[in-house]
Image (cartoon, rainbow, N blue to C red; front, side, top):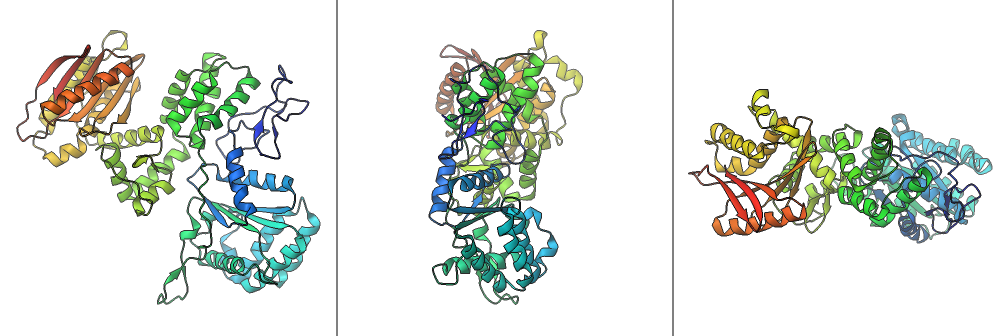
Amino acid sequence: MPGNASGQVVYDTENLGLTLEKSIFAGKRISMKKRFNITGVCIADRHYMMDTREKINAVMEMIDYGEYFVINRPRQYGKTTMIFLLEDYLKKKGGYLAIKTSFEEIGDLAFENEQTLSRSFLGLLHDAIVWENPDFARFFQDKIAEARHLTDLSKIISQVVREAQKKVVLLIDEVDASSNNPMFLKLLSMLRSKYLNRHRKGQETFHSVILAGVHDVKTLKLKLRSDGQHQYNSPWNIAADFNVDMSFNPKEIAPMLEEYAWAESIEMDIPAIAERLYYYTSGYPFLVSKLCKVIAEKLLPANKGKTWTTKDVDIAVNVLLAESNTNFDSLVKNLENNQDLHELVFAILVQGKFFSFNIHNPVIQMGVMYGILKNGAGTKIHNRIYEQLIYNYMVSKMETHLTLEDEGNRLEVIQNNNELNLEKILLKFQRFMQEQYRKKDQAFLEREGRLIFLAYLHPILNGGGHTFVEAQISEEKRLDVVVTYFQNQYIVELKRWYGEKKHQAGLNQLSDYLSRQNQQQGYLVIFEHNKKKSWRKERIRHTGKDIYAVWV
């Protein structure tokens, strides 16, 4: 693996992967202090980075074929870093001229008319290369005055490509900033026309155009006439599908941990920790880096330790879920602003309903675009951190509508050594449901019952613990709730009553789950949907496990 005399991580220019020559430079440290990055572009000599080689190679194959495409992924999913790495790679590859810019840099005045847009666009291209290629940049500067219409801009682009005598690749980041502007769509329409005619003499154009943003620009529509009589037409329907997986699997996470462990003299089981990070994040780039950052900068200094364990990852998840950040704020905002998406997520998480995955369903498509949903043997929440975040958000909203226990009653269920009396909690919840909700109809309880239980627990835990929820696909639509309170852990299963036969099968499933969690005692809350409820309680000994059950 390539390195240099300082032991620095360097680019492999053939594969654009981050590599580290540890065997030769053992005991030496990376010359520039690095950290885990969660904002903006990740830079190899400043930040610990996951292995991007396969992703870069896949995108470069599209560029080599001259594809036009959109890197459309959710917020903080590595789009800007990908654009940066592609530019860096193309500069080193030879035969290419990469021009990277961002539409965040262009103001609203640029979209007033074709002249202002054409001249602003040329100004962006000039600024993108002026420091590395001032002579060629001057060509753009000289042409600005000639650009009065988009047809002029089209001719200038052809002149630029001929002048460059290389394959010119245009990379534009943050296209969402302009995607709702009709003038921007006209620019795309002009580039589309040039793409379709690029083999004709005098119509030379960019070899490849890559746009990056949350929205898939190729779905945007351009109205051909202002009177609205004509159909809408997509100005970017030439774009190839972008199917590169931008999430990171455990093998791609591991090199980042390896580099960090070597640089900071940290002991860790790298494969196990990489798997644990993936377990919680499903490889969402921001979440992986954020958890690592929490451990490195908050947990380790507090514990004065030099060892990472999978338990540290679990603790980091709890720390992260208690934070407010722009990623989480955006997720909640998207649920609040889109009622259909909120209802779908509620049905999946709280009600345990199954929905097949169809990207052509507008609501599912929206959820995927925002990074909330994914295809995982049906429509699923993207990752376990988002699952818990959404539960916490929905529980908090439910909690504001409940008449809950006072502080004195809360303290009744807390025993010595910060242990919870779960039996007493379940009995008090049963009484709470009997007093507050016995007259509610079955549809309400089926929809809201489990959320009410989680909201009921929330003030009892009161900063000393949390709940981690995992839906189980089965006829009973089980919900397994892991309750932690200080050092103690409790397993509570929530399910509907479907009769004695299904009940016995459910006990088997709960016993198996308890075994996997190394627990002897389990708890069961059964929601009856009969008009006449039993309101009973029962101690059950099943396959060597002790289970306390209440019916509500």
